[in-house]
Length: 155
Image (tube, one colour):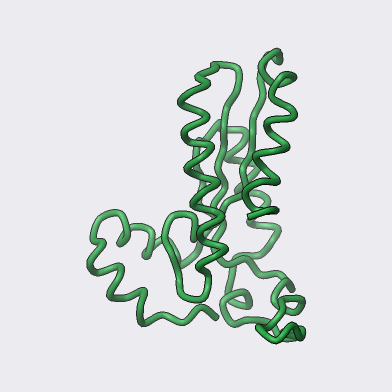
């Protein structure tokens, strides 16, 4: 919560006086696909991203300013080495590349999609591969989503 939620909220609140006086500003929020739906072994992370999206959606509506645009970026699995540095429950280093990340979108493709979304003033962009299926199921067929999600592994 400190980094994923409060960090982005605090930074935006600090910059808000400057932003409201600018001719055009774009606040880019880094969420996650699990800000859209919960996922096994990601409850705290998912909660922080749900909170982030809810807070800024409300803020955007409450502070309707034509000069300030909000873009929420929701990446899925991105091919990075972050899982090597992840900590296990006992505090030791994970020291391996998770399958989900190994099969994820490259960081370069992710960055390109984010830049395009910002330039297009998109309100929300999903940077995903196969996760798009789960997003659509969650929105259109929640019962089926929960049935499948319970069977999926987080790695």
